[in-house]
Length: 66
Image 1: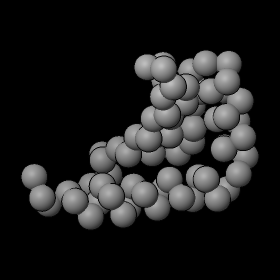
Image 2: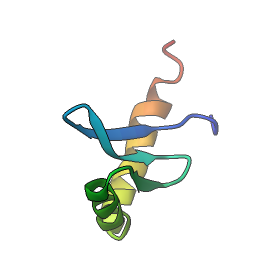
Image 3: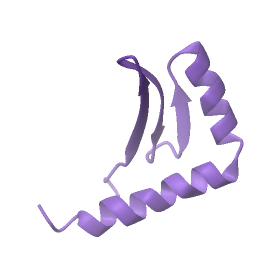
Image 4: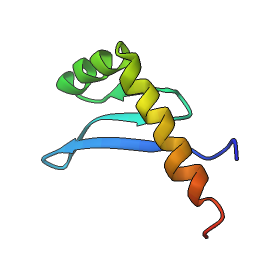
């Protein structure tokens, strides 16, 4: 169960701006705007906590379905 990764990507106009990766435990930006958004979200503990909770709620809850 430790190798399960939750990824939440944010796109605009087919371009990935930033993403949360549960293996890193933080947001990573891929554009100038995305880097700013990732920094903002990484400095806000509620965003990080919500994404970690999503991994537990979504991934770990559905691991036995497939």
